Amino acid sequence: MSTLQVAARGSVATAQPRRNPFGRDWKLGYALSLPVFFVVIGLVAYPLAYSFWLSLQDVKVGAPGTFVGFANYYKVLFDSEARIHDAFWSSAWITLLYVGGACLGKLIIGMVSALILNAEIKARHFWRSLLFLPWSIPALVTAYTWKWMYNDVNGVYNAALTGIGLIDAPILFLAKPEYALWSILFAVIWQGTPFWTMTFLAGLQAIPGELYEAAEIDGATTFKSFVYITLPSIMSVVVVTVMLSTIWTTNSIQFIYILTNGGPGGATETFPLLAISQGLRSYDLGIGSTIPLLFFPFFAFMIYVVTKRMLKTGE
Image (cartoon, rainbow, N blue to C red; front, side, top):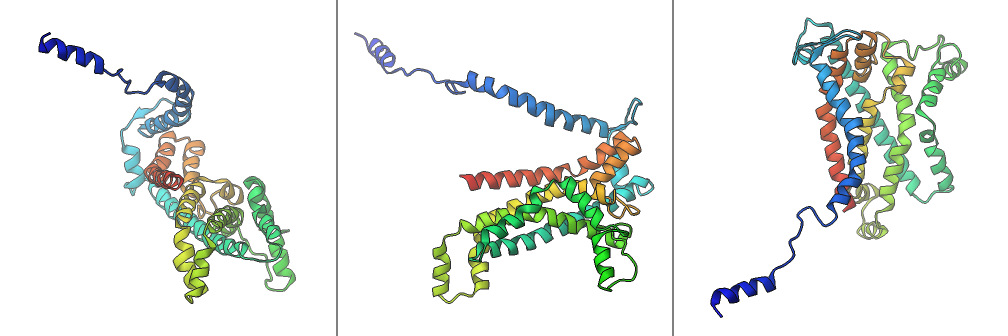
């Protein structure tokens, strides 16, 4: 028997079945994924692509559009002669104040309340249930309730302040530019803080008690235990909560829309309200689509970071 014949027989004996690079059940996997694929295309990709296409046009409601390229983006960002230019930068600044103030307030109050509820206090379960109550109320109901409480004629705040003699005339909480944004912030913080408290509390309960016992033996104060044990242990929870709440607070308009509708004089007009105003009231779909897309890279980055951190936490 020749050497070639022996080699051929050996190769046949040791040949392994060829593996499919896509996996054994790849057809079934793709078939089951198809509904999700079509949902993502229909609900995410198509609206986003269509909004981008509208932002490249000078188009009004009911009229054919004219392709203008990135002229709408230039007009909004750089054309100081355009009315929308000042309105956009004003709304961007108001959005920053609104979201920053809301997240800072919810962070401080949420952290303090979580630390209190995590301690051994009497009726702890009752206080937890009571604190989480605002989050269970629909935001629409909460917004109308706060609007009534701020009312200058029969609102509880003006009635209480007048009754104890602190003010002589009603305060126009929602009608004066210097009060309007603060008034909205109080309502938003009241409604959103329970979510922060709940997430922080879950993070606190996952910290082993042995760490605090060791710190106490070493003579660490309560403040040092918080700085060197508590805060590092729940930092991932804090970061994810801040980013999620930033996205939700920025995009939500129900409180501003119901309480002031962007007024008085645009003092509370965030960029989502400005986009609605341009698209649905001024009928300018091109500018109305351009405004939210300018913030899209910022939100995409935050979503990427949140997803990455959540997946890392779950590993």
